[in-house]
Length: 199
Ligand SMILES: CC(C)(COP(=O)(O)OP(=O)(O)OC[C@H]1O[C@@H](n2cnc3c(N)ncnc32)[C@H](O)[C@@H]1OP(=O)(O)O)[C@@H](O)C(=O)NCCC(=O)NCCS
Image (cartoon, rainbow, N blue to C red; front, side, top):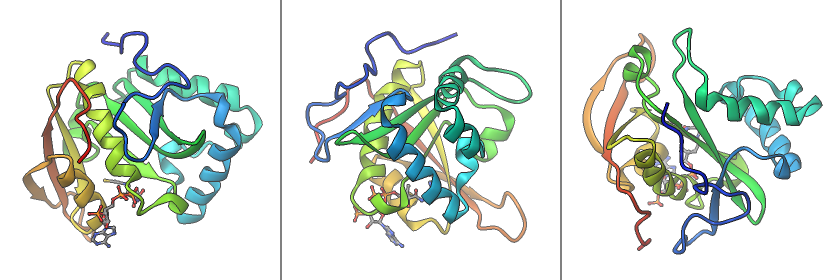
């Protein structure tokens, strides 16, 4: 199984020299416990808690186990699950968002989910966090062996569409996945091995 080489996300070290926002992608870590839990509460109020597995209570009561479970996802497989590497975005040591990379596509992910998914903490939106997370994640996807990545996004999600297109996403198709829900846009991005300089 493909794993990122050691040193790709050392705790406390930035991955890029040119990050305009000083966002650092790190592996899930206990060091940002308080800001992470505060963020989870914000996501929960918004109804978006699904992405962390709904385990707010587990996270609050045993953050070490929660972090360990997130780290283990990178080698977990079965029941339709494919390995997935999580990165947390820190800004001045505060958790401000998360992005994850599926190492391969399952049939379900090919329709909805794709290789890469992300969320910005509600109180940090509109500052370029997601754009920067995706920019930094593309070389990490490349290091996992992905030369091209699929991102799926609701046709109504203008902010995410902008994030993907700013990172070079090419719209390949838009399809109805479920009745009464917005169609899904399917974007593909060719990965590169280095984080480019920001403009
Ligand atoms: C989508 C999401 C990740 C964007 O995060 P973010 O950190 O605010 O994104 P950024 O600040 O990097 O960029 C957002 C871009 O969308 C634009 N935008 C925001 N709302 C918009 C709207 N309603 N219409 C058009 N553009 C919009 C912003 O102006 C910005 O573009 P700009 O840099 O050219 O000005 C965030 O809104 C989120 O977490 N939403 C809920 C979860 C989600 O939708 N995840 C993605 C699933 S595909």
